[in-house]
Image 1: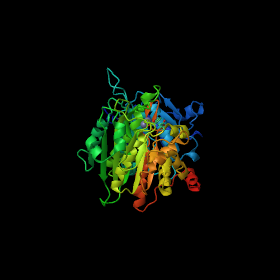
Image 2: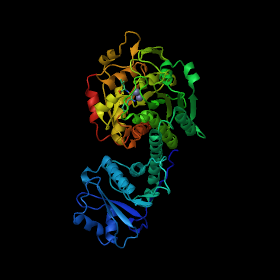
Image 3: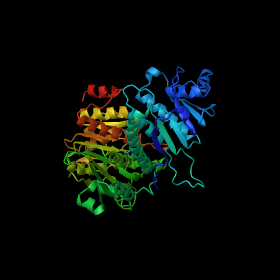
Image 4: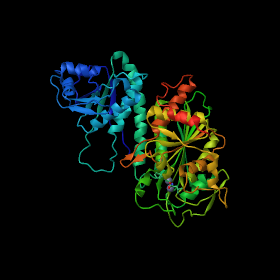
Length: 523
Ligand code: BES
Ligand code: ZN
Ligand code: ZN
């Protein structure tokens, strides 16, 4: 059911004017200046590229593209020009944008073999391996399709081979390093997007558990899948209460990657919401757009994608992924508003709205996660509509009890373009969760819905350094799953390894405004 990688990426030090291929991709600055590869094509191609710019066919604004269907004397069939904008403003983010634009243009072409000379562009403070990595991810993302349920008489046309041009032979090794990283990230993203795009009748809790088991098979990773009885033995009364409305049995998935030199090093523990369909339960959701609630396991999907990439990269750190997964459906056995459940932590919860179910599974999964004595605990969840109202589809909501961790996550977001934005966890919000009948209620009223949801979770993490990412607005769009926040999390883990090795994550994030805002906030 899931996508197998169909595009093959390689690096080449071959000259652009010698490529016998369907399409060669080169960059042009807004000033009309041609990149080195574009110059070579222009020289051998009777000045066709500079002519196109001179005649005003191409403004070369960042992210614009122009396809030259024929350039005389060149062995390639076509040339794709990519606008780079102003040379002085061409930084990492602009480079990534240019790669994305090239990928989008490619997706619309019938080209099977392509050579792209974007990694040879100069990008301040960025290494060649970084540029190759970004190009691989951008192309793979742009060419991603989810069509397992579309019947076709013939296979979809698509780009099969993409070679990335590097300046010379000596750069091939660095290029290869970038390829490996790019492929690992791209494969992780594909897994995440595929899983999130699958409908609820296919991607059930047991399906997610099978995927986890397949990820671990034949590797050094450990996997454990707990069934309903084992979940009951752990006394996860809150998680089970959500699951009881559905005939699909719940699962608790635990994956472990012990990559650190010291296998006992405190792990990073990631917890992901895995509601494979959220109808709201007895507090039934309205019919409009309810289908989008198949994405309510996007947190779980993101963590499986991150785990896949961490395995492929053999990252030298210890990582544990914990995924509570079930459905949230109404039925004669379903949890009722007013019911009181007892969590694994012993705290009792008055369930005032069965549609606020994410926190009901996460609280038990967080309690379970504490068993691993995490160095850092991060949960990822499509938790609240309120977070979509607050931050839209641009930034994921970040709630954190430790400033240094928040800073690191914000930096990872800035650096990867998969941004997060800090939200407050002031104590003053906690009283909204008071219940006359139990230790706490599962909703905190209309005001500050994403914050009270985070406050609820904060009651289950003790003193552990913890962050909660609300991805309700960022994990999916109308067109499908986005794969967020896989890139941010991978960047965070990579930075963490670099920091532990005594380096500073390179380079410092260009845009540090969010971190400043967080630091200056009166907490
Ligand atoms: N899965 C939803 C949150 C959600 C909303 C995700 C929109 C993606 C897009 C969650 O379980 C939910 O229903 N939350 C309720 C909480 C409320 C009842 C306090 C919500 O946001 O309306
Ligand atoms: Zn819900
Ligand atoms: Zn939900």
